[in-house]
Amino acid sequence: MSRNTNRSTPSVPRTESWVRVLFVAFLPVVAALFAPEAARIALLAVGGIAFLVGFVLMIRQSRRAGTDGLRQLVHSDSE
Image (tube, rainbow, N blue to C red; front, top):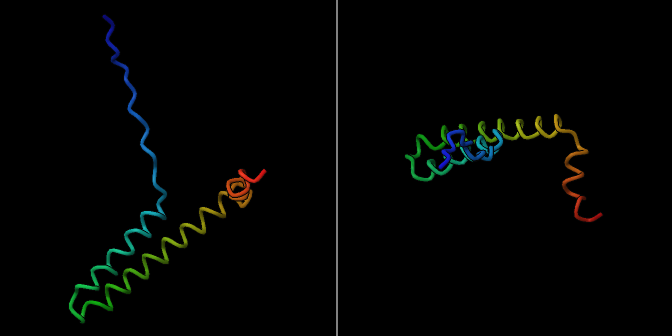
């Protein structure tokens, strides 16, 4: 009987950082629905700033990857 001691862990798919930031941006907005009126503006501001940061991260990633890669993803099925 052989023992396989060199087992590799399955690779976990990575989530892009901008997706995580955009998801976290909605948490203060949802909290503002249940928060007292005095805290709503602050929570909405935090959510808005987090959304802008995520949006900038997304734009930076798309520019770094180049538009050719995105065009190949979009038009790969039509050819």
